[in-house]
Length: 231
Picture 1 (spheres, rainbow, N blue to C red):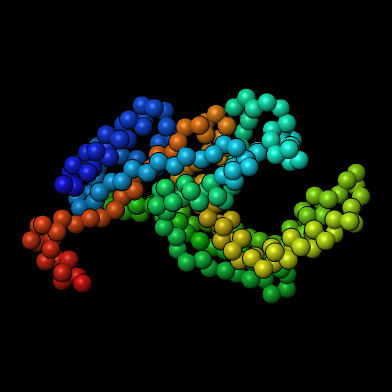
Picture 2: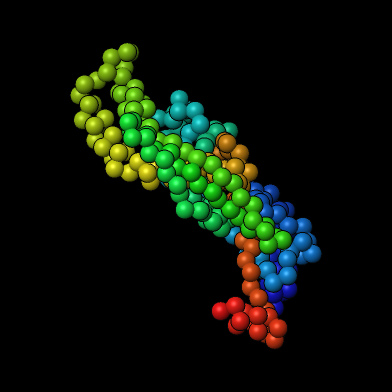
């Protein structure tokens, strides 16, 4: 039964490859590369290329009109976008990325938090491809960025101070969560070998992943005995 499942998955991969989809790691060319007792599941993830949907944001902010929530000029498909956290999470889920517990380093003198994290995906041979990385959250820098957002021709709009204070408070409340998300985003891009930017047209094609999981043949007496003894 497992052979049939894997053969079907391999056929699916070939079809998606012919369609020009983004074929993501881990990759497999033949069933011989798959470790005994493991099965493949094909996952397809569609990322919305429209920034308002939350998966991506414009690479060049000058091309985007915040007020009307659309591109300033008619979309040609050549506009470049980057992955938001929502898009990265969808891709990580598609690849079945496993995460370590986050480790935090908190600066006692300044509002800074550093998150160390490791992500991993299983390869066809049953081993793990791992990627450690870190991400820091510095509220002093966040405050400067917020002030710059409401500064026009070198003068800060004091009427927007409440917006700065409100957003800074939210950032402070969720600083560790933001650090974890930042680390996950960085790891996902490196671990899955994603490009830093994609064109809108490129994102019309879905991303295709295979998930590798161990599924012992319980009909085999020796396998059933080993699993029973292990439990």
